Every structure is written in C-alpha cells, then in structure tokens.
Image (cartoon, rainbow, N blue to C red):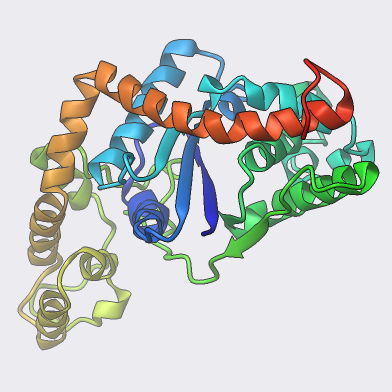
Amino acid sequence: MARILTGIQSSGIPHLGNLLGAIMPAIELSRDKANDSLFFIADLHSITTVKDGATRRTNVDAVAATWIALGFDYDQNMLYRQSDLPEVCELTWYLSCFVPFPMLQNAHSFKDKSDKLSDVNAGLFTYPVLMTADILLYDANIVPVGKDQQQHLEMARDTARAVNFHYQTEVFVVPEAKIDTNVMTVPGTDGQKMSKSYGNFIDVFQDPKAIKKQVAGIVTDASTLEEPKDPELSTVYKLFRLVASAEAATAMAEKYAAGGYGHGHAKAELTEALVAAFAPARERYNQLMANPDEIDRILAQGADKARQIGTRTLDRVRSVMGTGPRKLM
C-alpha cells in the first residue's frame, strides 16, 4: 500500500481551471483503495502572504467545500487543515536544524523575491522546511507535484536522507515525486491560461446567471455569424469540449465549420454545459458553505486520523534527537 500526500493552497474558491487541471484528477487518483490519500489545506503556508484571519478561514472553507462537493471520500481517506496538527511545526524546527542555509537561499520561493529583501519574511524563507515537514511527518511514499514544486520535493528527499544518515537509522521515509507532465491547461476567458492573477477565470459554483455573465465575457474574433470558423481557434469551443460529452463537442465543431453558427450560440451551449455538469457539486458546495460547522467536523475527523500517523513519526524523531519523554523506537 502506498501513502499519497497532496497539499492544497488555501487561496479562495477554486476556479474551473483548478477543478479540471488538478482537483478532479487528484480525487480520481484517491479512489484507488489500495492507497492511503492524505489531502491537507495549507493554511499555515498562506500566512506568508495573507495576514487577515477571517479571509483565511473563508478560503479554507471554500477549498474544503470544493473537494468534498466534487466527491473526495473523506471517510476512506484524510482531508485536514494543516494548522490542526501543530506537530508539523515541532517537526519543522527539528528539520530546520539539518537544512543548510544555501539550500534555502537557492529555493525558488525565496529567489523569485530576493531582489527586494524587504518583502521577504522569515516564513517565506523557511517555506521549504515547513513543506518538508508536511511530507515527512506522515511517512508519505508518493507526492504528486507540478514542475514548479519539484525542487521543494527534492529538498524534502535530501533532508530525509541527511537525518537518516546522521542517526544511521530510517527515521524518515524518503518520498518519491509523481510529476504529471500532462497537466491539463484550461484556457481563461481571454485565451490565456486560466488564473486568478489574470482575472480570466470562471467560477462554476456561482448561480447560473453569474456563470452566463462570465461566459459572455470570453474574448472571440470578429467573424460574422455566416462565416465558417475553425473551432480550434475558439476559446469557447476549447472550454466546451472539456466539460461536454465527446458527441456534443464534435457537433459543436461541425457547426462552427459549416457556418451560420455564431459565437453567441456557442457561448449559450457552453453556459448550459457548465451549469449542468457542476449542478450537484454546486448544490453541495453551497450547503457546506452555509454550514461551516460541518466543514470543521470533516476536517477534524481527517486531522484525528492523520495525527495517528504523525505521532508515530514524531516519536521516532524525538527518540533519536533526545527530546520529550524517553520512548523506544
């Protein structure tokens, strides 16, 4: 049995690009009953940039509600809030005493902002150590990461090996990266990659009227209704084929190519497809957001299960490092 761990940014309501590109594939991966899946919401990491507590709580609720609404099985697996396990902070300190300073200097999370050091806080500088603790605390075997996080995973591997070598015993499981080179790129309303930073995203958890308004804002060319069009040049079509059936996508492509079919028609079909595809998830999401106590209960349940794993790891660390009560490994 493999243990799979994934950290989820607590950055507000996930948009369509997040859903199709990362969340739904990860949920599909978690359905393999041969594996344990731990999915945590990285609210401690977010403090490096987001200082407002109310905003953070709302963001955590939105992310948790999204994963639950889309079908993550939190009974079979574990969904938890990072800050519900302070053990990760204790482990971060132990690990920071093994991580060499130059390694942190070379981390992308620091180097990208090092030209203006007044904007760099200690939390951002030690971000990779907390990420390493997130992974090593739970004896994770596999960590799915994007290419942008591959360096941090290598730091976690190096740190685990360094501690194991120093104490001449397997204190930590050395994790393996699972890098998906086929991550889906979802176009935004302006044709660029969908991103909150670009403001070109679609929020499928809003009501149908709001979704229709967002779809109406998709940038299209100036071709007339009568002209035949290449569907591969249409952002509307590219989005439609990601959420509609293969038959419906083929039919839209044929209508584009035949002429007499305008972008307005395509936008209407896309709106209908988005509203229908995410209707059950939208209803469940809104139920959860209206009942944050249920979200807290589910996250606490996940934290309790994750703590059982983390406590065993921390006991090993305390034993070899000589901290806490005397316990045999």
